[in-house]
Amino acid sequence: MSGHSKWASIKHKKGAADAKRGRLFTKLIREITVAAKDGGGNPDTNPSLRTAIQRANDANMPKDNITKAIKKGTGELPGVTYESCAFEGYGPGGVAIIVEALTDNKNRASAEIRNIFSKRNGNMAGAGSVAWIFTSKGYILIDKSAISEDELFALTVDAGAEDIKTSEKSYEVLCDPKDFENVKSALQKKEIKWETAELTKLPNSTIKISGNDAKQLLSLIESLEDHDDVQKVYANFDIPDEVLEEIAQEM
Image 1 (cartoon, rainbow, N blue to C red):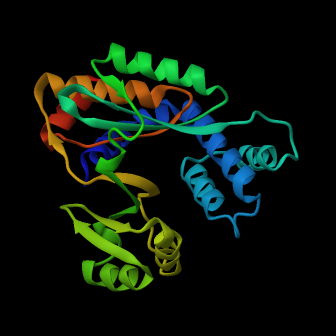
Image 2 (tube, rainbow, N blue to C red; image 1 turned 180 degrees about the vertical axis):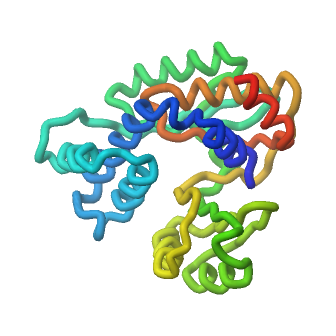
């Protein structure tokens, strides 16, 4: 599991995600609204909306919130217009970071995110500075108790999966973004449940860090993810599992 994915998993088990449910709902509502605006309000014909709705359901968001978010996107209800944007930079230890945001004021968001980088021992960089380090992928995390490796391989490769990585407790299924819905559909037909299913950016190379750099980096990432406009943060760090666990207990 990639460093950032391991950190997200540890935080979820701690209950940190539940503690910030209100902020999570706000971010999911924006994601649904923008997806509906860009591709229409029917999830059957809009894969981005379908994925956003699934994420909302996984977070136990009330269905009424989802319906209202879709209607705001299609214009059936009044709502704020959000613009998608990305920011790039470096964190402690030279770790590359990409921040994806949905905002109603790009200049304000840029200034505030730059300030977060500065206060947390990082720095913003120009467009394209670190984007080349990452590749867009479909990512599905599945508990090993759900299916055997051979069965998972046969099922997902036929649907378009490029790689399956196995760890002690889970599988990571990777695919091209265009095949993401096909792979998910193949799993759903066999009633195989996943822990995480998302379009993400995975680093082509990682930077190993530990000690104070690791603590400062994770503090920076937490601060970025807590910003209301930020939807996702990607970083190419590699921190030992035991260090991640230790830092999680302190934060």
